[in-house]
Length: 336
Image (cartoon, rainbow, N blue to C red; front, side):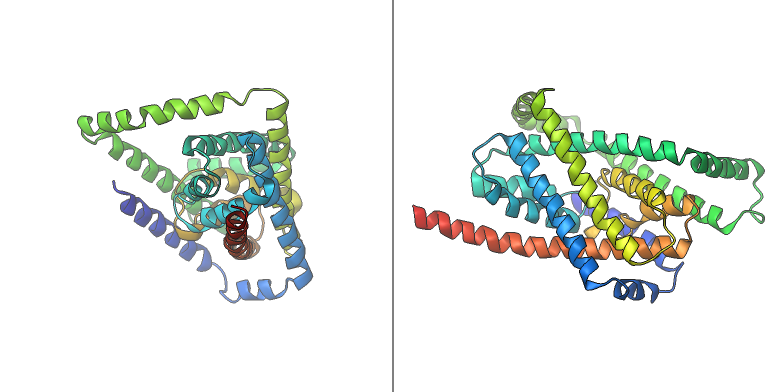
């Protein structure tokens, strides 16, 4: 399966999910919700988001352990965040490797290793946070799970509530997504053996270099700093979105919102997103909220509003990154 085919499949899945969500609400609800957010709330949210990006740049500096200054890393990470949110299938992460190599002459294996280490730190923090939130909501989660299991045992479609049907539709779509991933992986294994051997030989040296870079980060004070930075990155990203939710006065509690955000972030680690993550970003978030009995209209509306504003923030920082890198480049040339 070629990359173009993967992009097409992920885009179709995203559009299908977005259509299913939007068909369940009045399309006018989204612009109304956006207009209800004050300019001050948007500016505060943007500040919190920018702070999370700055901490992300600081974490990369700690991981890379190079002479690259934070002044140079911040515009690179700003552009990386822009491409990561816009490009499909997590291909935006390649921009980070490319920009570091172009602007700071950092080897590709070193920058790729920093992505893996930062992702590992994020996953550890996210799983711990998900455990705490899940423990707090265990009563509701168990109750809702029992509802689904009882429905599956009874097969009484007519008596099944609207929210339950909605949850099952999304669970089915998520299963389709995982099945698609399975087919993609299977298609790779079905390639000719000679081709696989050739590819293995090509990347053998790079894998060794990559493992060497990762091995440099030991379970010491440095790794604890990386974990701490990951915690604050996730915290400020959460505060960015929660501040927006509170500004819209929706019937969404902080614990339900926390569970939905954590679930959607963990789900986003799977490289299945289409362009700008349309549909695939909102689906797990909405599924989690509806599963916890949040009104369907509030869940869907908040999902699209959050996505729109985050994209707006990344575009602004992306434009800043382009302009700032040009300034830095001129400054370097003038010092030569």
